[in-house]
Amino acid sequence: MKTHYYLGWFNNFFPENLGRLLQEDITDRKSIAMISSNPSIHEDDGATERSWLDQAGIMFDEYHLINYRVQKEEAQRKIQNASVIFLLGGNILEQNGLLMEYELSDSIKESSAVVMGASAGAINMSAKWLCSKTFGYGVEKSSVYNGIGLDNFSVLSHFDLENNIALVQSELSPLSEEINIYASNKDCAVRVKGDKIDVFGTVFLISHSKIRKLDETL
Image 1 (tube, rainbow, N blue to C red):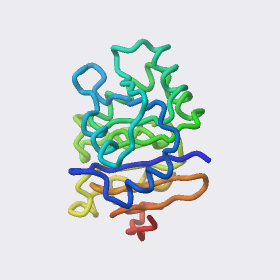
Image 2 (spheres, rainbow, N blue to C red):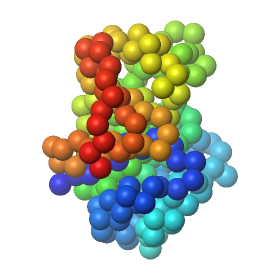
Image 3 (cartoon, rainbow, N blue to C red):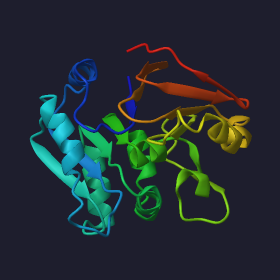
Image 4 (tube, helix red, strand yellow):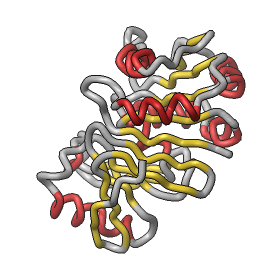
């Protein structure tokens, strides 16, 4: 049963009950492949995201960082051999470029690993997402990008949603006519396990131009 975690951002560490769920889901801890969102900046090594896992008592025998220092074939091999694949937070467009250039999406989709993404990483895990100035991207014209497509929905993660509900609803309305959008901010998660979708923290569903807050199920 495939397990995917779409995470917001955690200013401290995983809350205890989320950490416990991850402990239960991540049983194979041989190798973690962390996909950079700033692949040209070699010092950006996912230390924050790794600290969340460390604090939850989830350690791995091997840690691999995938950025432009790693050759394409080696990156694909690390993905194929990983117990957990973690798409790091940061620059969503840079990470999307790495995924496309290194042709990693199919390897990630075919993997039986637990796949996690934080903020930008969660957005890139989704089927498609809106790149818009409203959401802080340095673009003049909005456009829809393809993500990995692990699940057939879109994600808006780590955005100041609560103070911009009407703006977000208006901006995402066209895309929401096509696919569901899960929108969240910090300290939250959407977990897909098999056919079941669970929610932790404050998460909104935007569907057919309507927005509603989801009940927590985790």
